[in-house]
Image (cartoon, rainbow, N blue to C red; front, side):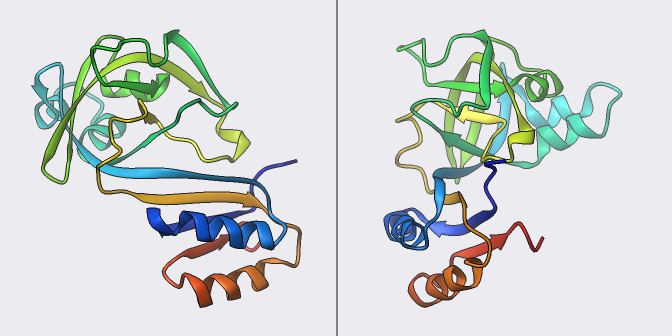
Amino acid sequence: KNAPNVFLVDMQTSQWPRVRKVLEDAGATEIRGVPIVNARLVSIDGVAAAELAKQGTDEGRRKWILTREQNLTYFDALPKDNVVVLGKLWSDPAHPEISIEQDFAKDMGARIGSKLVYDVQGVPFELTVTSLRTVDWKSFGINFFLVVEPGVLDRAPQMRVAAARLLAGREQALQDRLAAEVPNVTLLKVREI
């Protein structure tokens, strides 16, 4: 009922305040923008991701999870469609933490206490799994398999993605204004899609 019906991608972090203002001026509600940091999994508990991808009989999803580029994000608080089901969010001040969607964690072979190393443009980040969560994917909100503790990725290269709810018939005017003010931002109109 209140699901986002426009998504905005390819946004530079510095453009977010301007894009948010454009959305507000268009009458959008349920506005939410989040950072995205692209990374590649290096290892889980000291075992290289490439080696883990060779193990087991499921060549499909597991191999895909272990070898593809991942989108990491960070939140101060989880969205309402995310529920921690095991462990505790941001509970270990001695280590940078990551929370993983529980089915994704199972498929990749991670558990509470696992040490994941991600490569972010040549810089390694070691993250400790301190919570597993469920995600209500049917909410159609911005959700991620991997959520990192706030502060850990602040200086990493990143983009932004946003979602909002817009009244029918206002999409074209929004797209026109975005094209004039921030032409690199792509508007995805869910009604049309």
